[in-house]
Amino acid sequence: MSIASHHDPSPAVSVIIGTYNCAPFLPGLWACLAAQTWRDFEVVVVDDASDDGETLAELERFGDQIRLIRRKTNSRTCELPRYQGVEAARAPLCAFLDADDRWDPDFLRRCVAHMQAHPEAALVHTYVRVIDGEDRVQRIRHEGVMPAGDEWARALLEHCYVTISACVVRRTIWLDAMPADAITDFGMDQDFFLRIARQHPLDFIPEVLASYRRSEASVSVKKWRRAPRNVNTLERIYRQGLWRGLVARMEMRRILADAYLENAQHWRHAGYPNRALYFARRGLWYRPFGGAFYLEGMKALGKMLKC
Image 1 (cartoon, rainbow, N blue to C red):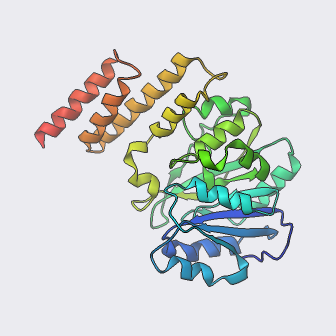
Image 2 (image 1 turned 90 degrees about the vertical axis):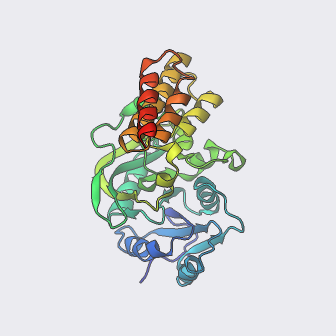
C-alpha cells in the first residue's frame, strides 16, 4: 500500500499523526491516507513511547513513506507529540489525524484548496461523523450549531467546536499560539483553537468529510472528569484570563457553572451518582447559591444511598 513519500522537500501539507499503543487502528489509518485524492503531502508520525511491541513494528513497516519521531517517555498528553510533529513539518499547512480517526477521500483536497484560496484564514475544519469502536456512525458532531464568522472566539470559551482530526492549519500560526513548555495537560487543543481565534479568522466547510471515534478505548472517554464538557480546560482558560476582551468575568463564571451542571446531570442520568456529586460540589464554587447544584447533589446522594 502506497501512503506517501517524504522525499519531496516542500510538500503542500504535512499530515501529523500521534500514536501510542494503537496498532489495531493503523491498517485503517494507512488505508485512509492511501485513498486521499490529494497526493502532495508528507506523513509525520510522533510515537508517544508505545510499549505494546506492535505499534512500532507496524510503523517501521512503512519505512521512508513516513517520517517517524520516537519519544522516549510518554507525554501524558495528545498535544505535545502533535506539537513536535508540527515543529518537524516541512509544509506550510498541517493536517492532524489521530490514529483511530479517519478522513474521507476528499478531505485533504477540499481543505487544502480552501486554505490556498483564503490566505487570511488561520485554519479550516469540517463536520465529522462520530463513530464507535466498530465504525458504526452515532451522529454528526455539532450538527447545526457551529459558530459563524467572528463568533468563534466567544464560542470556544464554552466548548471545543473544532475537531482536531478534521482541521488544516497554517504551521507558523499553530506554533505561535503556544510554546511547547506550556503544554502540560490533556485536552489542550481547545486552548490552541481559542488562542488562534482571538487573532485570526477560522473557516468552516459545512460538509461531513471525516470521522471522529468515541469508544470505550478512547482517551477522552476514559477521562470522565473532562466529559461531556471539559471543565479542566475551562478552568485553565479562566485562570489564564483568555476570556478577557471577549466576555465579562461574571459571564465566564456562568459558563463554568453551566458546564459543571451539565456534567453533573449527564453522569447522574448515566448511572454514576458519585461522579454527578463530584461535579455538583465543584460547580458551587461558581454559583454558591445555585439551587440546581444542591438539587443535583441531593439526587446523586439519594442514588448512592440506594446502592
